Image (cartoon, rainbow, N blue to C red; front, side):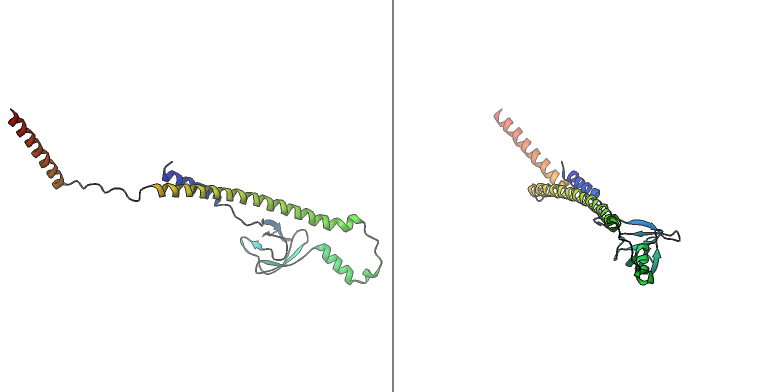
Length: 194
């Protein structure tokens, strides 16, 4: 393998890895009550909200499921779900004084199970991204090995090519003249012997 082939192979390894984005967050699209599509990297405080690729305008945005997100500079500052609002209203109303029937364990644990399911989905996404990053790092490692092999080959190669003699009319005439003189001497010696 020559130097150029090695360099091309290294470039190819790095180009295969170039599109990989080490961003671990996944973007999810949501539909607002008015039908507008927004993209959210994480539905949590601090998450980024974009509308047509630009940060969402400041204010309150209600999703189709009733969840309300408050944004400022394209970042989520507050999230409230319809269940939370209903609970807030119940607490603040006079009806909250009426004894409520005891909730079953399933009802109590339902939000916990929902959060656990979301966390498991998030962990699966993170695991997939980590696997892609490991593959990318393996490609980079292979590229580095090949680059080191190329550097070692270059270190073994001579630093400069030997300077070739310049061929011009003067050097050629001298060589011809030298050959003619040598031939004349050989002929003269032959004549002396005879």
